[in-house]
Amino acid sequence: INMVKGSISTARIYLGALSKTLFEADWADDYLERLEQDPSLSKDEHIQHLRSMMMEVNTVLMYFEGTIMLPKLLAANRQNRMAFEYLMASCLLAGDLEGFLQNLYRLDDFNYPEIPQLYEEAILYIIFATGKKIDLRGRRISRQSHQRFDDFNRTLRRYGEDKQAAFNELRKNHGNTYLFYDLFEFSGMK
Image (cartoon, one colour):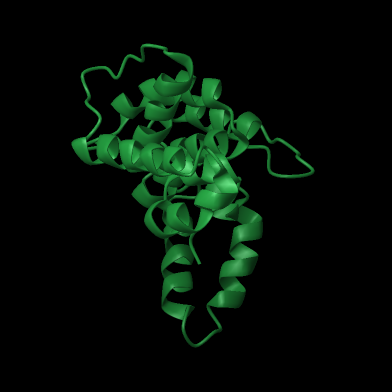
């Protein structure tokens, strides 16, 4: 962390301690030698990659607030797939479907072969609930997601929209879906 942040003197202290250990000595010695030749580690691809993922400005948060930190990480590096996936998950878990839709275009920044299943389910739910047309930027929702969505709704209707009565069947067949999570506010997975 200290090498990535540029705190080289602190990094040297930790690397010196690690160089005396059984399992990390070779790695630590290698980085101590690299620091002698390139004190800023500007030629180290791994360190440069990690630096490209860092936020430019330190943010102090009392708790994890994805809607604040994750967009900043993406602004610093739009190829930060982990930040993108955490942001989308954060929006879905919080029920922030507008935030989810506002960031859906970011799929273009990554090489997803298809729209992730949970995103497809959320998109279908939004279309169903609001009637909105959603620009998928040339992507299509899979037939399997359409079938899961239809089956989920058929099951719920069969129980007269009584979610408690439908719980066991929905959990068995759809416990791993966004639809189940949205309806019951927890995952049906064990």
